[in-house]
Amino acid sequence: MILNPLDYKIADLNKIEPEKGRLLIAEPFMADSYFKRSVVLLAAYSDNDVVGFILNKPLHTTLDKVLPSEINNDKFSVYLGGPVETSSLHFIHTLGTALEESKHISGNLFWGGNFEQLKKMINNNEVAPTEIMFFTGYSGWSKEQLTNEINEDSWLISNINTKIFNKKNLWKEVLKKKGGKHAMFTQFPENPSLN
Image (cartoon, rainbow, N blue to C red; front, side):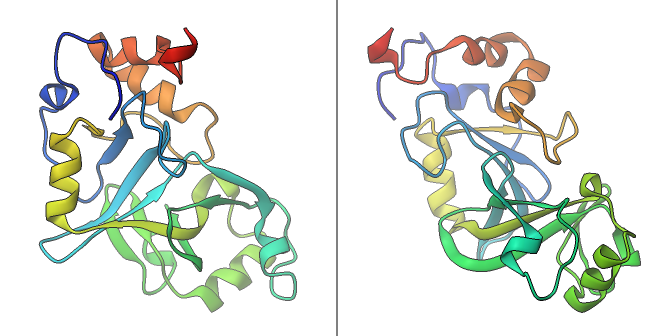
């Protein structure tokens, strides 16, 4: 982390621990090109590994462009899920057990599932863009690595407090809804040296 103009540590604002189904919110001055002002959904959290997907980094392409011979629906945006295995395709959704082989994250959120079944559902207009998000790559940490990053003031931890699918300005919205000192972060310039 670079300059912190605050009189407190960002890590001190974390009142909950990371776990599957929670959000990681990048601290306001994070310079990392992948995670700058990002919101990451933790889809898996265990002693062995942590997997998440960046929810607010659209790639300005659609699923039919990524899979032109398999998808004939141009309504599904694709996002950068993270810097790991960027040639892989992942998805989170609210289709529940209607999509076979889905893994439950929390609440009505699920990860993955039978992709052949999903392609048919998409091509038959049985799935809406508000029910699913697609990602190239994912974000991955060891549990110890993520703990260290949180302790070094890189991440705020949050429960999901808003709709997360296909939202513009998700980073600001999540922080504003948390209120208090969190909401103040939305007023900070991305580069404090330009202020």
